[in-house]
Structure formats: C-alpha cells, structure tokens
Length: 102
Image 1 (cartoon, one colour):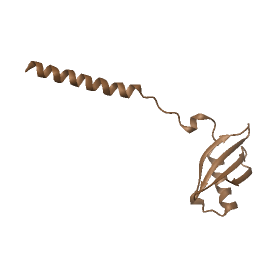
Image 2: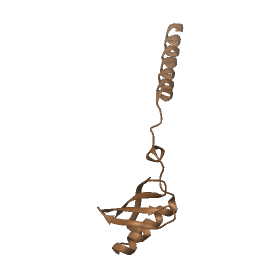
Image 3: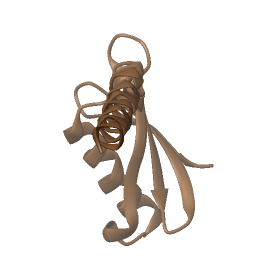
Image 4: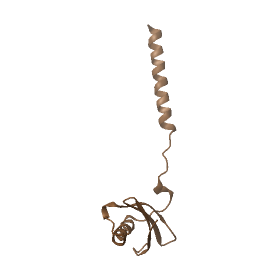
C-alpha cells in the first residue's frame, strides 16, 4: 500500500512540475502598439470623422485599425469602413493632409 501512495505522490509532483514549467516558459507576444509610436486617439477619431464626411460613410462603420508616426509631426491612420479601406495622413495639430480609399 505504501508503494502505491508513493507512486501517486511522484505522479502528482511530476504533473505539477510540468504545469509550472509550461507557465514560466511562455513569454508574452509583442503587440502592435509596442512596435512604434501610434497616433493619439483624438487624431485617429478626427480621421474617422473626416472619412465619414468625405465619403458619405456611416460613422458607426468607420474604425481606425492601425496607425504610425510619419516624421516628427504627422501620423498615418489606416481605416476600415464597411469592408473598404482608407488611409489618412494627419498632422499632430489635427489637420487632415490627405485621405484616400485604398
């Protein structure tokens, strides 16, 4: 009877060790936002609003999907709108420099 209890204990220790090894070995994956500087949220929303006005799209269907800094004072914002895509270039002061469907 002692032999079966010690076998069970060894199996339990091995199971816990494997579980802990799996937990500590994994590393968090980098996110898109950590890859570089993104446009501030207010500028992304200005791009979405301008796309609604220029393209006559419903505001509820326009979403910023990614953004990146281009130069020292402007940003590129990629938008999706009801299955279509657009690219907005906006200054850090909120002036839309270009907006095109792609």
